[in-house]
Length: 54
Image (cartoon, rainbow, N blue to C red):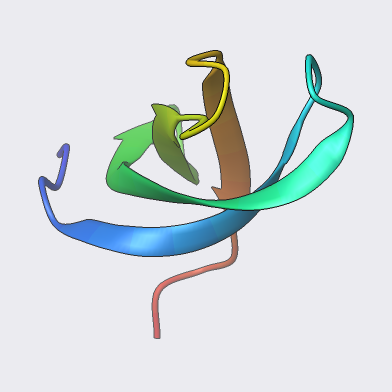
């Protein structure tokens, strides 16, 4: 169920309080697709909820 494709996504870093591009892996958990990665500046975990796969 979990995909391991690495791509660049744009997300909001809560610690930096800015939108940043991050490299993340797409994971699917309980029907939700999300990209999970790390902020390139501060190292905080970042997530972005994605739409349905087309």
